[in-house]
Image 1 (cartoon, rainbow, N blue to C red):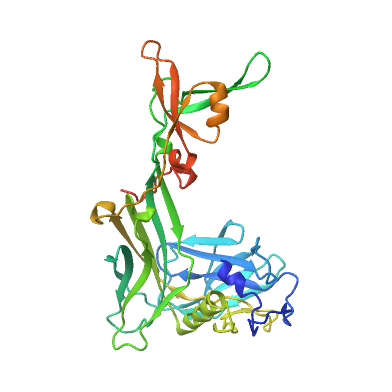
Image 2 (cartoon, rainbow, N blue to C red):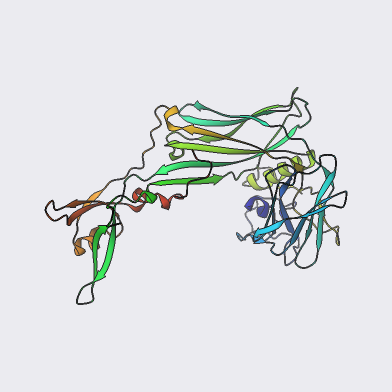
Length: 387
């Protein structure tokens, strides 16, 4: 999202001067409309995000809420998307007719209408494979695809990484907070569940998901055949991502030349404006227009294609000498209120030492929270696709 907002009136700006720059471009108070997404002509979801441009020094995303969004066909068909979150609109399983053209139509809350040009449904070949290999001590992932008809030429990919993570220590204890007769606060370590005395497994098994953030495109226009083998991501040696089980899900889009050029300019404008030697910001082409004011800039480019997906799993056992180490250690604490208050309130209790005669917890071990509760780094909800 920020890569679209960051463009925000960088039209024709020359970066590199040490003096404060004041843009000559006057933006309306509400900002210009930003349209992100692509129409999925097949099964799966179509997701469109609407927002507004903001000032150059602003980090706030101004979502366009309360709009009405439609996929319209040249045969006068119209399908409404549902706003599932502020500025985010979706619909599943459009299954559009490949022989017809479609466009995106938007009616904002203030009554203004925006429409993309009618576009044909573009064919999108299946992803051949997601592969990986060791490069030095790192792991490099690749996407491999081809169009036997040599018609696609322009591609875009997005991916989401998911990996399993475990806490270093199991925990069967928690702190109990009370007061003594004088009203002073007291602390003690007690079992999480007095009926089982077992560890809290919800703190042990977790999963973390990260989406891709960079614009990732490819073209075969300068190649003899429509075949692509593109590096997706490099996982550095001993990363926590590959410590147990890792998965990547890749989405592939086929692009028109217009959207490909739009994304290339967007990439240059947002990822390479750090010095006078970088490519300078350029004006973005768009196929979305304000009906009532055709001169009003709109940021975005809508294409239509079926979305192809493929998932890969990588097991830690298949990667020799992958040595992720979280560097955790435990300390033993007497189960006495004063000792806990002084030594353990910023630690989490793990397991007890008990009196063999009474079962009373005499002391306990404790470690930094990030070493005990994996929910501080991920979610304890197992993904539906996880084995």
